Image (cartoon, rainbow, N blue to C red; front, side, top):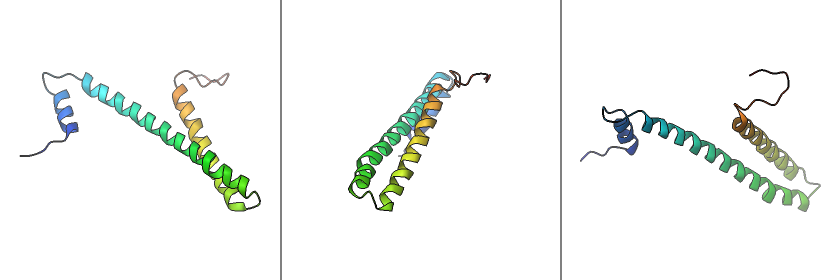
Length: 102
């Protein structure tokens, strides 16, 4: 007995004569939302690592360079991802910059 993946069955159902385009469109939207949710969860993990790992390490040994460097790198990456997530969420609502037309 051959096994078919659920994705193949969904695409076959969506493209069949009796099916419509809507299920395929909905699955695309669900994929985009799940990727956004996964990105936000990853951002949350980076925030937790920055706050719970590197801040106490810097407080414990403020004269050692390595924890400061790790804190700076983690904070920079987390901040950049946060800015990108905020910009992606507000895209289409205008950039907020005066004098710039979309």
